[in-house]
Image: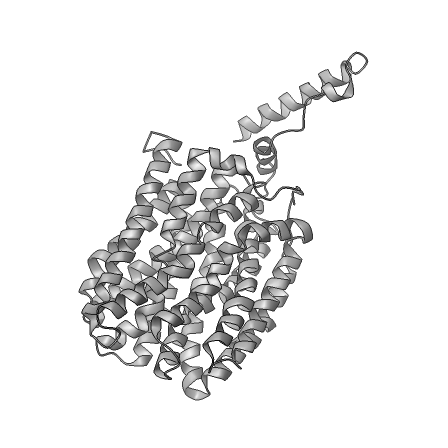
Length: 447
């Protein structure tokens, strides 16, 4: 990387000197155009500090991630409480839970424009404000499904999407050699948040009410998330008028990554959304269901750090492929046989780690393929493809469950949904394998 960058810099310098020497005979418009996006990325990456204030950015991003990822992955606890209250069925309520992360995908390109217009700090502040406000408002909407769609789904969803674009792109600007580790730590905050939030929600529901559970979580989000957002700042913001690079769709590697991400998101929320209901179907208490979701999120935190480290050790594409392969294997070979607590814990550990690894490795893959100055645009475009999986992944599993007898029909009724989710992960893994081969045919090489 450094050798290539020096070469480019020398070429640009020499080119500039030649142009200055010929200004007397050449018109201004004949001078060479400014460097391309790829060249700018190489030049920017050559001066990455690989630390310094970057660790403050990592800490602040992890705190933000604690809340927006943690609450999304704890929806299963809320969903079970709403089903028990008779508000609606699991498939409909999965739409509410899925709408929040779906906003990440639907608004990704628009949010890339926002972060370039107002900067990472103000984008983060607005995101945390909307996230917490939507949760507080949801406390007044627990008896109305439509109101839940509007509050926790839309208001918190917009906040979640703004938070996501900030934590996915800002730490990348400060790291090159340790980029995978930095992203892993950031998203590990979300895994820890999911573990803590799911247990806290279960206790709060029992001690107070579902309404006050929403309000307390929202107020805590604002109290801790806003100071963290204020610490966010960009190292080298790139101001461009365009926020979609259509030419990327002419790049086969980008198309493969786009398709892999779009397919991989369908199964992501199936386990955390349905684990509390599944635990009940095999005779476990509600507290055990919440503990399983907490364990899933805690495993996700370790998976985010572990696979983030693997990005630096074996290459980000290898790490992404491994995460998707483990996710598919666990849902096809372990979860369907988990009629007792022991195998179910094994599934939670493996799938949670693989699930979290997807989020830690994807920004690293995008950054390594397209460079730090293009990561906001490229990541925004990739994440846009996740809309269908975020919104429909959980509900499809819910409809399959209903078609085979519903939540009260026993654990076997969940198997079609498990097979659907696992198959989607393996298809995504296959696409990443093709991308790896197209990037470099030497499989032992770190890519």
